[in-house]
Image 1 (cartoon, rainbow, N blue to C red):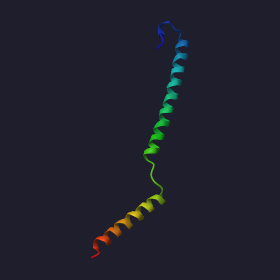
Image 2 (spheres, rainbow, N blue to C red; image 1 turned 135 degrees about the horizontal axis):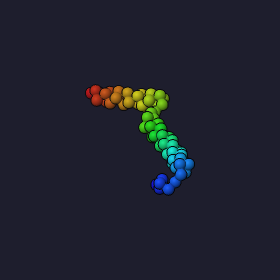
Image 3 (cartoon, rainbow, N blue to C red; image 1 turned 90 degrees about the horizontal axis):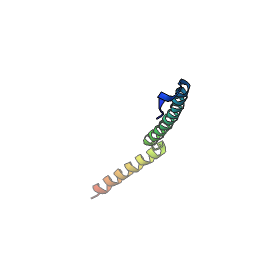
Image 4 (spheres, one colour; image 1 turned 180 degrees about the vertical axis):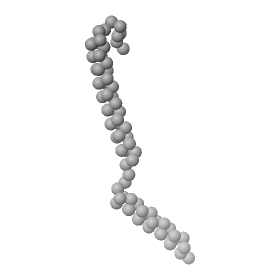
Amino acid sequence: MNNYNNMTIEERIATLESENKSQNEDIKTIAGDIKEIKDKLLNRPSWSVSAIITLLTGLCIGLTTYVLTIK
């Protein structure tokens, strides 16, 4: 960090403004990364995939029940 005791007010303000700009860019980058992670975690299959999974599960259960109940 800079030694603020030997700087003029204008130099201090310029330094703080550049640090603030850098921090704002970092915050925007972090926010974008968080949004990307959140989107990946909340990603769910489409309705067609859900319907196919439900259909296949029902079919498997039905066939298993049929096979187990045949004498």
